[in-house]
Image 1 (cartoon, rainbow, N blue to C red):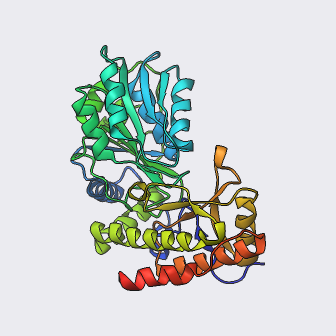
Image 2 (cartoon, rainbow, N blue to C red; image 1 turned 45 degrees about the horizontal axis):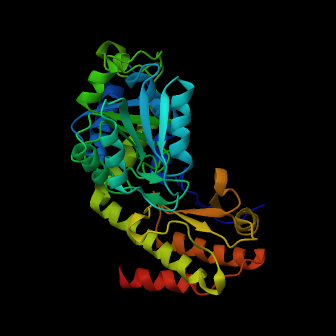
Length: 390
């Protein structure tokens, strides 16, 4: 049996604050009544502040994968072409869903260890003189690799190419943790989930949609019922398809209040500090030909997750298993081509310095026990950074 506090250091789901758990610990109420409508209105107003938008936000009882699918089936018709900006496992899986619905999916190939160069996107869109590409799909913070793309710069690339493509961005592991500006950065569709920066259980997803996207959805010919934005935008449906997950809204209201109390800029600064401390720790492990940060470009690393590449001949999953079995610390694993090659340290949501430092110490012990070569002093390196940037 594991004793003490379970250190959940995955990049999602994340730790659920006690305040959120307590807020959800109550009986249900009529979701058609005035009491619930007031809660719902407060939540969607708070989400607009987090999304930084004056536009429309829609919700579903679903994971982020559901919000991916909702964006596809509302905007497109069979045979439409979309361009996926490759960034890792999740970018390609969004594309696979498009293929399942009969879309023509083109991938703009990219090294998983680096963010995409906006000039490459601009060049590809300039080649598309007939404007067959209906949308550009991007993952802001690629949860599988720890690499972050520059959403604003890629928007400028689309504009410079004078291309009318819709701009769809997955912010599932960046929303409420890293700066994101829907309206200012010209994003048409934003895909988000409840279980990461919003500090809720898995099970609720959100889509921010621009007026341009709503207009495009009127022309879409793919089948849609549960995901249908037309129904969600119809007040007679109560802005929800099916039974409303009332308890999630209790938790969401509390989570949004916590974000407001801390202040979004302070939330982003906290995440950056913890991310930098983690990166300092991994750089210490890099000694003795040890593990390294998977993302190779310092300016293109996510502030919510660090993927750690273990040396050839060693298994990252063994490190993870030791950390969990012996020390009750849960880390994320490698996905797809990175399985067994990386472990992932999540540093987002309800997290502070002692939680991070305890986890770093545990990883170093697990590296020792797994026989993975590494430098020493990761905890001290993280402490030195945090103390110097308090």
